[in-house]
Length: 402
Image (cartoon, rainbow, N blue to C red; front, side, top):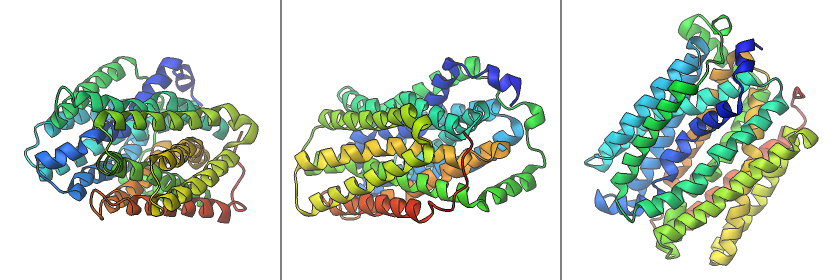
């Protein structure tokens, strides 16, 4: 590991990296309480409004697969700053979008730009870490920053809607983008020295992807991370309609519920950081997957039985919290063996994350704003599939460096 990379691993650096990994959740969570209002204003159906989440996730997926290899060749700092600048501009344009179709295009651009923060921040963590367990701990610690976004953003969005409309939410995202660009330009170090960068252009990038896609352990952990994220994506796409349109909560009350669920996600990640050295990243990930499968199945059964929020919300909270055990460890296990293509690996991990989310988000609204079974079925199906995949491949993985 190069000396410059080690020297730059300060607490301030990790706080900044945590903020950069929050681009994706921030651009989705902050305007969740405004989805019903936006659908009425443009006007658009519930499915069309939820497509703004889908296009954002598609952008986040495509942007990461581009930003990762670029950062392996050009370094981490300059590509990231360019992405943050475009994110701020795209957010400002979203605020003045005249129709749902223009907004969909702009959300795609916004997602692609924000993806640079996600993939390059992950690669930077790998640059600064010396083992798989250390990487898992650092990813879990980043949740102290990035995990506060799903806690604060919907709550903040609910209060923002008291003084402005959904367009004001996007204006705020633009301002946040400008602020992060300024801080990153002043404080972000370069963690990939020139001598460690990949050369050879597109051919080299494709070769790096080929190496990763032929690694069974990488593919397995990447798929597990993607399947795990579908829980969050499904929740993001359906929660505002479930809680506001079906169960009658106000935007502010919805924001409070979302904040509590966000606190669960943070709690799970910090349990992971505390115990990963004792249990190992693979075992903690397995525990999280098992808990998630049980809770998602319980949520599905409760939905079919017509249960109220007193039953649904505890199931949902534990399910979301379990993702805090899965996410940091699945990412660390995927990146552990490939420091030479950390950016490309981080990009592919991101594709699985937001690609899977983009696939499931439109399905949540197929039954209309008052249909709850599609959301519950997707939560249960993906959570159980992830647990079964982890069980089926548990005996074929290489040991992780600790």
